[in-house]
Every structure is written in C-alpha cells, then in structure tokens.
Image 1 (cartoon, rainbow, N blue to C red):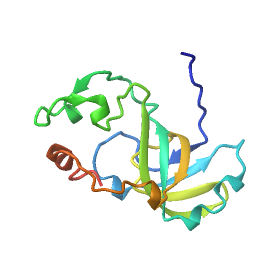
Image 2 (image 1 turned 180 degrees about the horizontal axis):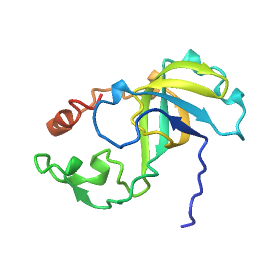
Image 3 (image 1 turned 60 degrees about the vertical axis):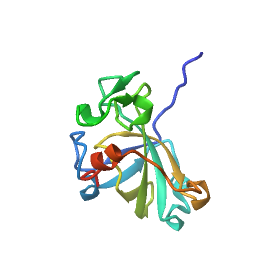
Image 4 (image 1 turned 90 degrees about the vertical axis):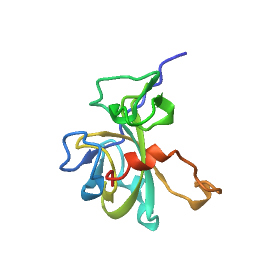
Length: 151
C-alpha cells in the first residue's frame, strides 16, 4: 500500500504544553488555519455549536500495535489499542468533539479540545445530530473511571 500524505490545515494555540490526561475543560484553545487556506474555510462555522477536530499526536514517541492497560494503569484491564483512545496509536490520530466559542478571520476558539499547544490539525467537521449514534452508547465501567477527571 502506498503511503498517505496529509498536511496540517492548522495548529492548536493554548497554554497546555504537556500531554497530561486530566483537566482539559480548563483549557481554551484557538485553532489557527495555515497561511495557504482562506478564512472562507470557516464561513458558517458559528452556526454549529460543536465541531469535530481531527489532529495528529506529533509529540507521541511510542506506537502501540497490540494491547496495553489504559494509561499504563494495571487497575484497568489490558485492552487493544483500538479499544482505547490513547495517543500512542499506529497513526497517532486524535479526534474530539469541541464546543465552538468564537471565530475571527482564520482563527476560532473552542472548548474541550484535548490537544497541546502547536498540535497539527488535520481536519475540522461540523457535528450533525444525524451522525451521532441513534441508540444508547455502551462502554465498560473502567472507561468511565478513567474519564472521571478528564474534563
């Protein structure tokens, strides 16, 4: 298979420089589009309360292709990388739904983006209710415990 080349469309600007797993709700982030993109790319973004951000964990130095304990915590069961959301993934891609706060030109401010300063943004997609699950979301008990202080 040929390599896939993806270039950033923007970068995260915030005060979080360490990839700490908790208290992301206290971080407000600005997403700044790259120079080669027009500010028209963001036209209409304020009509949506939330957008999904796809980003690249460029500071991740480890790649997990099997299973591990989430957060390297043996209190949680050992599960495959595709059954958890850690940054140390085969392609180091993250995805988070964020609240849109404001927009000015090629920048917009969001809340609840769990990405550190200078993280490359790969894509931005508006959240449509119709794309969300139609049925109740199921997840194991350990994942709720893991997320207790995340936001």
